[in-house]
Amino acid sequence: MKLRFLTSAVALTAMLLAGPVAAEPILIKFSHVVAENTPKGQMANKFRDLVAERLAGKVEVKVFPNSQLFGDNKVLEAMLLGDVQMAAPSLSKFSRYTNSLQLFDLPFLFNDIAAVDKFQNSAAGQKMLNSMRKKGIVGLGYLHNGMKQLSASSPLRTPADASGLKFRIMTSDVLAAQFEAVNATPLKKPFSEVFTLLQTKAIDGQENTYSNIYSKKFYEIQPYITESNHGLLDYMVVTSAEFWMDLPEDLKGEVKKALDEAIAFGNQVAMKKSIEDKQKIVDSKRSEIITLTPAERAQWVEVMKPVWKKFEKEIGADLVDAAYNSNK
Ligand code: SIN
Image (cartoon, rainbow, N blue to C red; front, side):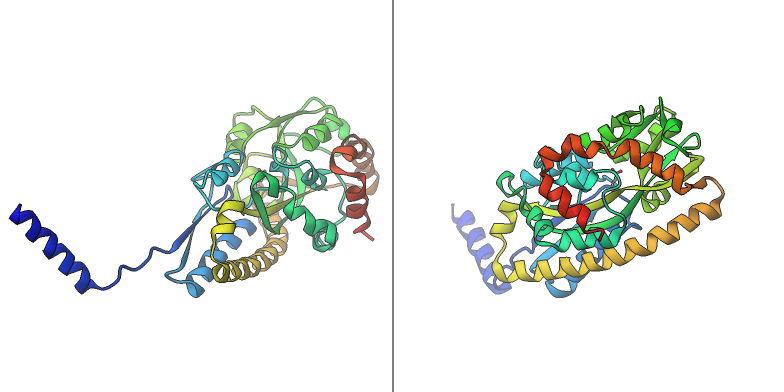
């Protein structure tokens, strides 16, 4: 008894001498599925570094790339359970939580990234960041990757060339309808499985940006890439409403500022990568990049565009119009 008292007294004295115990920094685990040398990978690392510089000891960001922690199909559940605090899934991966973001998957909706920017910065685009609030998800900002191209084991010049082929798609019904429109078979599969599916010829092709095709080496096993620019691959950086509400106001402001700066940086990387990574693929001579003639491209537009009508009601005709008008 006497010994236990003595031990406690010694421990207490040691604690008092050591001074107040420093509080642990608030941890933000940021989980994503792409390589570090991509627009999203670079954005997440920049965010981590800016937070480390400005909020040392108060907030710490740990980035988990390459589906190390969670694949995109699981990450939102994990975020709602508090196992990660931030993620940036592609806009095609939110359909369990909102219909409206399906807008961004409509084929041939945006002519270029300038039109995407114009729409995302508009009141309608900004409102969509809050479209999952009721489900506990807060959108903190959009991030670009770029326009998607089609890669395949055989050359694709016209929609007839895609007929009967199997394409991996993200978890989006719009993307499924887009491939069904050309009589192809869409398969919803996680990003982490695409390389193996292509390598084992379980699928014939996939759609993605030059940055993902290059960084995940799809070009090494897909001999043809058709520069279709038929769709968009963009992201929403999200957190859980619970985590965001609990974050003290002063820190929240600093975290958001760092994130906005990181997103601006990531968007610059996206612009550069869409040119540089395409060139690296060309230089590798592993995959031929097919440029469509205007007449060939018009055929893809003609068969894929009816997908808009199919989803117009779910998404909202006003949103489709607003997005389309951002091309002007
Ligand atoms: C990503 O860029 O986050 C992944 C895209 C995909 O699943 O194809």
